[in-house]
Image 1 (spheres, helix red, strand yellow):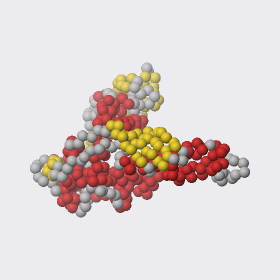
Image 2 (tube, one colour; image 1 turned 135 degrees about the horizontal axis):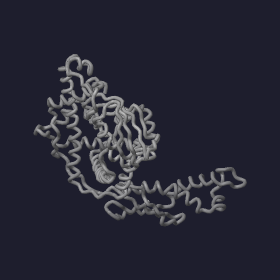
Image 3 (spheres, one colour; image 1 turned 45 degrees about the vertical axis):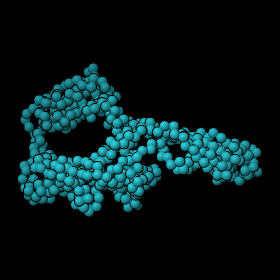
Image 4 (cartoon, helix red, strand yellow; image 1 turned 90 degrees about the horizontal axis):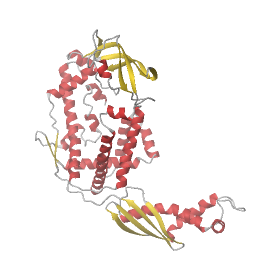
Length: 466
């Protein structure tokens, strides 16, 4: 087999492949067997029709077509390996010549990862947040913990921002009650920011037993987008009461006997979270610094596929929320246009990141061990709330194990970048990532530790369980 490569653009090539007919023999034998199974010829059992009879009855073209359907995809894969290109899209394949008994020729146009060099990343300078824990950090954690153990107490006054009300809601359009737009005994925190515009303003100043109406646009159901009269009937008003910060609270909220012990635990956990975050920041910032040094043309098909995938996920999110599109974007304080612009920007970065990390994976000869794949599956299963065996089977059945391994080696490439960087914190102190690894677990920190770092508002016993 001979393969010629023509560069159509920095991100697209045309492969011209010539294949001697002898190399098609396995596919042709398979084609004869397949056709023999499909046809019925008097005097022959299914699957036992001789090749010459098949050609006499149905023509050699039928066999050639089946042969090429089987052979060309495999030959294309070989041609890609031979040409040392990295496809990022499905190829446009055309069989351009069939010289029966001699050779065939086909072309394949495909988008590829462009050629580029990764600059030296040793000693890239990055700055990360300080790991110093302030009294304010501890107080913020304590306040979050108090919020979790707050109680609600009924008050004989009008509702104010931060109070909780229990209310009945109903909606009317032109005086007609909308059956699906009513709810009873709804508990709601005033000022929480409902997607039902005008609700918070209407509730402030209302007391138990009062009823009030306001006009707004419905956000869900058959009448989504229509203006309606929403009537609120407040049943009760309650205020949030936070527990006192004392030893009794420490015993209620944690395994500690005293408030000082709880504070010390929170301080230590906050520091641990911060040093884990330093590792994650070092890796991401080293990657950002490297990306700024490289200009990479992006294949249009890859960019379009990435953007389309994000738009599809967004549509699914909106459908699952039960909200209208306008209400959904209002809830997240953005617009469809802003979200699409974000998709374009983030998709381009994601593709570029993948290209760069894959280069580092290859140059550093990074691989995935069976244990690393097992650990990955176990972590993901815990996050998804499923059994590891179930997730492993799902990945295998859907040909996603390769994608999992790609994710693992790319994370390893990020670790290589972080470890190669010169890292200092915002106070000017040098940050030794390897010392952090040893302090945390005696081994390198993985990306999943970032999730733990973000769980800073958990009480001490929750973190122990995690």
